[in-house]
Length: 210
Ligand code: B1M
Image 1 (cartoon, helix red, strand yellow):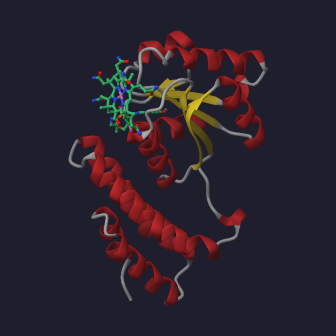
Image 2 (tube, rainbow, N blue to C red):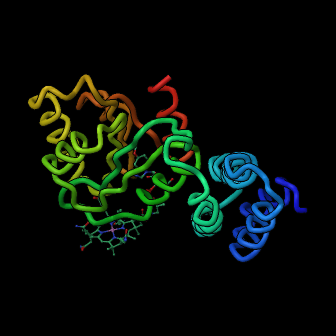
């Protein structure tokens, strides 16, 4: 029987075929599906997060690791009832109105998912109204907005203003990120925090919900 460490290493190296083989083998050995997720798949992705933050891993490798982890989760998830899936909290993530850049946003989404958040990825060009509607529908804990253009970052303020207007601002934590975004901008528009990269977004999310 493979060890959890073998599975973590397969995630780390982005080897999706190996992840599938090891995950199946652990399932067939009768290992608790939640342990396979937490001690094998997520454990591997956590190392990826740390290495990416330190600059020891790069975007393509992180995407491969995330894909490999997802292949394993795909096999294990049907064996776990919905209520048993642990969650750090529900995150709605999207790129703001007028902005079509999604590589960094998807990286943040995958990293947050691998760190145990339930992530609903709304996509790109998401209007303030769409963020608010989805927050109501999903009862979200965190709204995460991404912007890559100096011309679209203003939509982050419009979105926060709409949450205030709808009386929902106190119900959610709002975090923002993307290349032109700074801590100062986050403070200026009334966000709860800024994350410069995907690993920091996970840390910030956990801190805000603690
Ligand atoms: Co565009 N683009 N682009 N582009 N593009 C930039 C952003 C630009 C800096 C290039 C340049 O001129 N040097 C420039 C913006 C200038 C500015 O506003 N100051 C620019 C421009 C001008 C444009 C167009 C207007 C070009 C045109 O058509 N004239 C156009 C706009 C389209 C639109 O959105 N309406 C456009 C289009 C495109 C493509 C479609 C071709 C493509 C996007 C493809 C896609 O995303 N599917 C594209 C790309 C690829 C880029 C660059 C080259 C790379 C962006 C990227 O994916 N980086 C970019 C130049 C650059 O950054 N070097 C550029 C990799 C990614 C992992 O990093 O997104 O920063 P990043 O995400 C990081 C962090 O920022 C953070 O974590 C991520 C991982 O660590 N983060 C968050 C991101 N979101 C977060 C959310 C969080 C927390 C952290 O929530 C809490």
